[in-house]
Image (cartoon, rainbow, N blue to C red):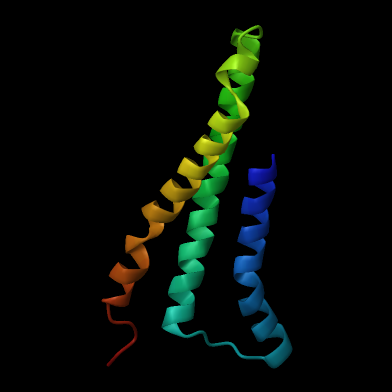
Length: 109
């Protein structure tokens, strides 16, 4: 549950600087690098959130299917390793996109 809260918090904090700059300073433009960084973190945290929901459903399935072996199968270290692997997978999955998008040209005559 804490991983879900962290991913929601990260998702909210990712777009917060852009919204504050737009509403407070009336700056409607964003630099390409800031846009790519925001895209990376928004999609990374979204992927992490869906991965956490998948693990939560597996956790409930295991608790219903094998209630007597539940605590021996899902130990604290195994859950921590699973969360770390999901975090790394989410960030590595989104890593190539900003570099690929940076090589393209946008709105040039």
